[in-house]
Image (cartoon, rainbow, N blue to C red; front, side, top):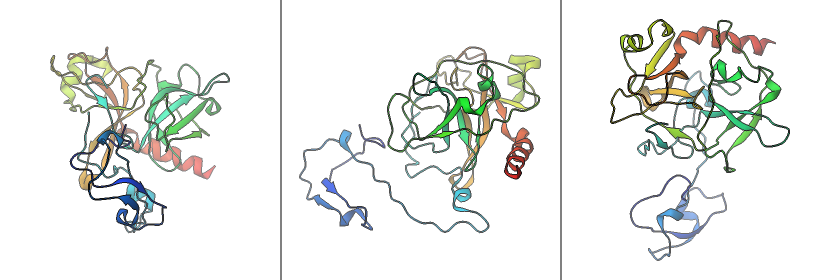
Length: 275
């Protein structure tokens, strides 16, 4: 299977061999002239490393925050969602529970928000506690049962829970990273369905149509709800939290509003850095 998805149109190069020192693909050895015995399912993805002048007053990491890699136009679509492209959402992370008998298993989604911090849902720590040694954070993971070339598993050094957190629960998960496009709904619609449980620190999103159901579900907890911003930059808007069932048109998914917790997030990051 092509790593970044199958291409289209004629195949111009076959048996391409690059040393890594080339400045362009044309400098690599290859069979040319359109003669090949290839299918698009065998297409190879090329990742080019380059230096980019950072925006004034910003680091390279900060200037790239919220930006997706190249193939912006290729959008594949959680209930009603389909498999995403590898590397399509580079800030997506997986919170995993360590085990003495097997590899760490997926527990919740998470979002990388800086070089050292990831954001997830507090209820992901309800069952097994907040001891950071119990957990690992995996980045670049596309399929939970397969080793991906660029995935990396990192230890967790600190877990910060909001002091007003009240426990909820969640469980099952998908093996491959999914994406779904959901409309953010007006607050009045959310309040009409959830009453007093829906607070100003929440938003809800999802399709209310019986025929087109798109929603987050169990196992998506802690994962990001992102919205497109200016300049192709994606903005972390919500954290997958709770809902009634999965994909029910009368019960859209509920997300924690990230903007309501920015001060707490920034204070927590600064306090740990000072420590």
